[in-house]
Length: 371
Image (cartoon, rainbow, N blue to C red; front, side, top):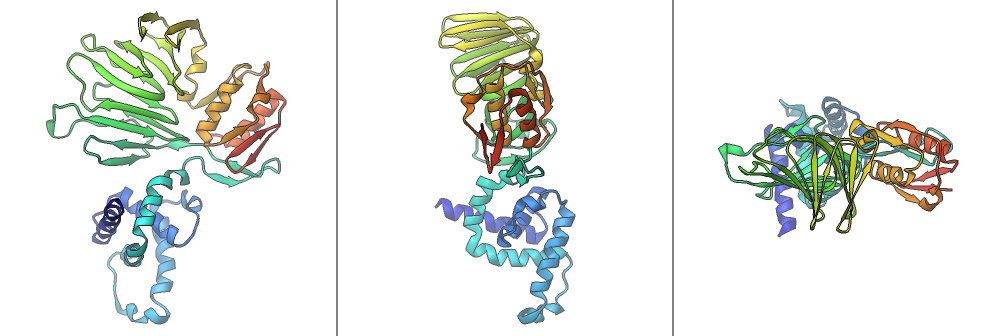
């Protein structure tokens, strides 16, 4: 039944493309299907704009459709050049729509996020580009939407709906996303993060669920405290800026400005700016921190302080969708301190890590070995 539904969805999309009613995103999906038919790596076309893609696709199809056995088609005049491509796609989709639709849904974001490229240095087998803006939003009615928007994405209840409908935002490895909630709160989501929130908050509180890492600028509303629930920990604020990290059942919160209340079981602590709370079991540990370090990713940076190499390896792994091998060899301190732009290719980050640690790094596909 699921395969049949996916097949129907693929055919409906192609029909919309033929009718000229497809959205920009749907048209882009059809173009990607074309390249999957051609066995052409999608990575090589991601830098082309839609016009260039259309021109390239139709040039290839024109040769097929208007030569040899298809000579009778020469008399046809197409008002829209893309109809030529869509016709061929429609025929191909009958046999392949199920496979392609599933492949597109599961793998499409890897073609633009942290894509592998040829190495520019003999020191590496290949290189990997940085991640980018990407998220999948799932609504209460089961509908899904893929967004690659680099600005704050805003979603309000439709049609004046006053009921609370949960929205799930999933940011994969090598992804990042910015969300504007209905109360005006701004949220930056880091890679490998899930956020669940109501499209309209209740009258007495604003509660969301987080798994991963996010930076918040909470809109002030004294009558409705803002609460983040994560791995049994509750973070409550009225209006402030702070970073929350909740990977692998560990929760920490670093406060930039305002005040934050941390609750776990029977324990409760209040943070002031420049402090971080780490939840360990039922205990809450409060420490003084360099806020710039905790919020570096939100500014588009990796932050090195000479002691946090394990943490940096995890951040790099999530952002470039790679796995590090022999991580224990980095158990060392360094006098190196500084930042690296997250827009740099992986090789540039590894070159600086090499200088800072004295170790060697090699890239093989999506694995990075430390020696």
